[in-house]
Structures are given as structure tokens and as C-alpha cells.
Length: 229
Image 1 (tube, helix red, strand yellow):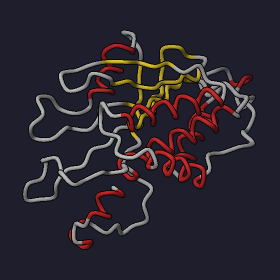
Image 2 (tube, rainbow, N blue to C red):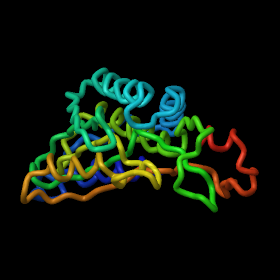
Image 3 (spheres, rainbow, N blue to C red):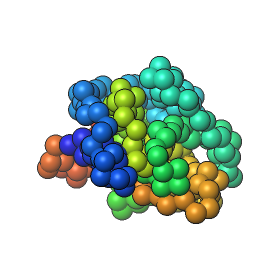
Image 4 (tube, one colour):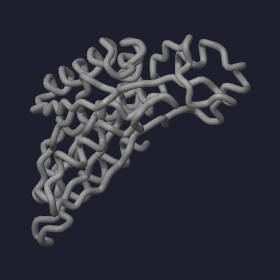
């Protein structure tokens, strides 16, 4: 439902800032985001394994995202960056050009994963965890990829320019870390957005589960819970 709403925003806003004579001339999409496809993408993300920063699993996952986008016809922008905690971090970004070059809608999700111990020592890296990051944030990354597919099959031009971004190093690396999380999106904001650009951001992170969701307390905090998470 969220993907449908985000995509509809681009479709039905197209031409809304233009003259009445141009309004509603954009084609209605024949293809809309499919929940089943987003789910399949989430499974593919999880199958790469524990996508902690500076791991082969994380690099393989982002390479897969880039390859999928290229097959859709996008020109993929890879935005490498480093920090004191990460030697090989990289955002993946694609652009859907709109009629307004300096008014952006940015939709983002992170492709890295982390696993913490539960309370009462929350924030410490869980030593036995090999999280597949299905929920955090395979749900967001997979859904964003499906949104990209829907855009690629639409022949219209949105009013606003859209940026779809898969961020690296969004997860805080634990209480022993010298820096906080959010490094990938920070790099995008500080390095990639020109001055004077108006930006609206939608974050896809940890969603699309059937509620109520069992917690680690009800599941006994076993290894299966953390591996899925």
C-alpha cells in the first residue's frame, strides 16, 4: 500500500504545477508496484547473509541492486565513501528526471544490516548473530527496488525529479563505535544535493509486517529471531 501511494504521488502530481491545458496528459501506468515482487526482492537481499559494513555480503547485495537497476534501464550512480569505521562503503542512486530540476522527491532505504544484543545490554554487538537483515532493512531495500521497476515501465514524466537511494552504513555499529549511524544518507545530503534544491524525503525502513509482530520477549530471544531480523 505504501509503494502504491508513493508511486501514485508521482503519477497524479505530474502536470499539477503546469497550466490547466497540460494537466492530466501523462499516461496512466499499466504496471503498479507489486507486493509479491517486493517480497521476492526482500528474500534475495536476505540470501546474501549478514550484510554488515565492509563485508562481502554487503558488497554483493549492493552489486545485485545495481545490476537489477541496470537491467531496468537505469543509469546507476555509485557513490563510494569512507569513514573511520568503514573502508568500503557505497550508496546506490538512480534518478527519474522531472520537469522541475530543483524540486526533488527522494525515497531511500539502507542495504546494510547489524545485530545487537537484547536488553538489558542493548547496543552491544550480538556475538552469535548472523542476521540476514530481512526486516531491517530488506523490506525497505526490496520495496524500493520494486518502486524502481514500476517507474521504469511508466512512460510519463513526473513533475518533480525523483531520486531513489540505497544507503550504506546506516546502522549504528554498537556502543564501541566511534561514530553514529546514518553515514550513507549523510554523505548523500552533504555531497550530492545542490544548494537551493527543495527536497522531500520518504524513508523505507522496517515495515510491511503483519501486526501484531512477535517481539524477542515472546520468542525467547532465540537465534532464529535474530537471524531473520
